[in-house]
Image 1 (tube, rainbow, N blue to C red):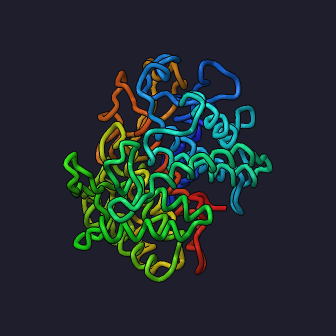
Image 2 (cartoon, helix red, strand yellow):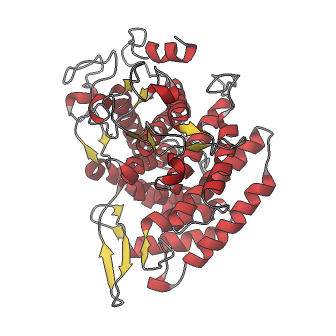
Image 3 (cartoon, rainbow, N blue to C red):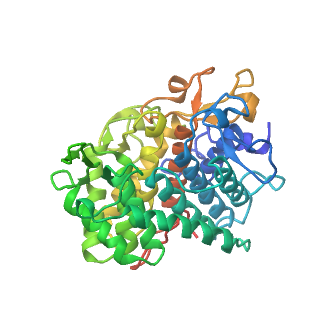
Length: 445
C-alpha cells in the first residue's frame, strides 16, 4: 500500500477517539484530487505537455475525441486543480508539498497542461458556442494566472490572450436585449442566470465593476424570486418574439451570483448575498444523507455535543440537494465553492457565515462518508490503480449504490465531490476575513 493509500485507509478510523475533532479536510481533498487525476486524467493524443480528462471511466484513450465534448467540465477541472495548487503552497500549519508526491507534476503544472489540452481539443481556440462555458474557463484561468505568479511560474502572455479573446465574447453577449443580461449561447434566444452570473463575476475580478453591477442589477430585477430569496433560471425569447420565464431554481445558479455580490461588496450587495445564503437551507437542502462519518454516532444517536449523525435526518445537519449526473453532476459543487467564500467573509452577519460553513461541512461530510474504494479486480483500476476513491453523485446515496463495481463513472460527479471537499478545506482552514473584499480564491492563502 502506498503512502497516499495508507492515508486514505487511516481516514476510516475515528479521529483519535475525540468527539468533535474536525476532520482533516485538506487531506481528504488531496485524496479526491489524486483519484480524479489518476482515474480520469490523460494526455491528449499522447502529446507531451498536454492534459485532459476523460468524460467517463472506464473508457479508451481516444474516447475524448469521439465522444461528447464537455468544455465546461474541463473548465471546472482547471478550477479544482487551482484549489489544490493553492494548498500546495502551504499554510502556517502545513509546509508546502505536492498533492501527488514530488515525482509527479504539481497541481498547477497539470492545470497549465489542461488549458493547453482544452485549446487543442476545442479546435485551437478557447471560443465556444456557450457563453457560460467560456465564463467558467475565464474564471478558472484567471485564478491559474494568480497561482502561477505565486508559484513564480508566470505565463502572462498566454493568460492575457485568453482574457482578451473571452472578454470580447462576453462584451458581445451582454446586450440591451430584454433590458440587459447575458445571452446563454450564440443562438441568442435565452438570457439566463447561468451565463449572466459568472460573466458578472468575471467582470468584477478584472476591473469592470460597472459592467458587473449592471448584470447583477438585471438579475435582481428580472430573475430574483423574492418569495424564496433565490434566482430563477432565465428568460427565453420564443420564435414569435414573446418572452418566456424559465422559473426553475438550480443550485449552481446561486453560486456565481453569490460570488459576484461578495466580490463587488457594498451594503446592498452584501445584504443580498446574506439573503441568498440564508435561503439555501429551507429551499435547497434535504433531510439526512448517506452513512455517518467513520467514528461518528450511528443514525439518530446523539454524540457528545447532543447532535446526531449524518443519517439522522434531524436539524443537526444541513445537506444540500444534488442534481444527478451529466451536467447536473456539477451543480451543487459550484454552489459549495461560493458558500465557502461566504463562510469566511467577515462583512456578512455571523449567523450567515455560520450557515454557509455548516452547509459546506455537512454536505462534504455526507459525501465523504458514502465514498467507496476502487478494488483491484474492477475495470476502473486499470486507469488509476486500486485504492483510489469513487464518490456518489448525491450525498444521500452511497457510492457503492450510485457507482457499483462495473458501472461507468462520470467525470462531472467526481469533480463535484472534489470541489466539495476543497470547499470544506477552505472553510475549515481560514477564519472569517476582516471587513473588506474576500479573496477570490477558494483555498486559504
